[in-house]
Image (cartoon, rainbow, N blue to C red; front, top):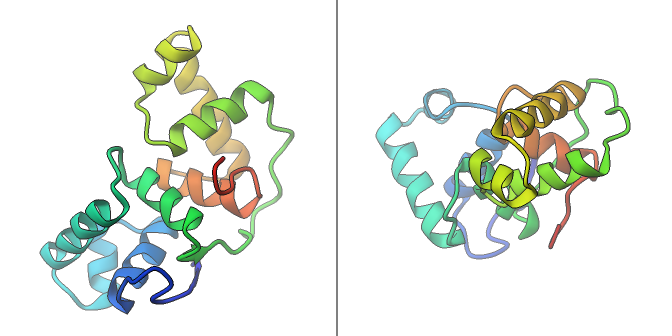
Amino acid sequence: MSIVYPNRIGLDEHQVRVLALLASGMTLTQAATVLNHSVQTITYTVRRLVARFEVKGDRAQLIHEAYCAGVITPRVPLHASPAAITPRRHEVLRMVASGLSYSAIASYLHISVDSVLSHVEALRRDLGARSRVELISAAWAHKLLGPGG
């Protein structure tokens, strides 16, 4: 799980805990179980967080913005360090963190969506991530992303 810094930018403790649980790779249902809340309450909290951070993308972008704001900081995962990440994969990683869809990334980089998917799958494998959210969390833990990155 991520280290938590409550109220750093005016979030309440519940919001920060939800962010930390999502950053650890939990689903909304799992977070609801851990916090002993309904899924609807967690969903409402995530919607409030999306509005607070003015996120237009997905939960991965929300987690990235929370890391950038210093609300949560990653712990280094237990799995091995990633192999050397190519400049192209690093570029794809930054675009995923910014909330762009795979088709938007493909269009911007002038490559196919299949190539983007291939890069993302390789990044997931290298960083031991199962989802976009875990990919962003692992990238932060390995210092592949940072504020403004």
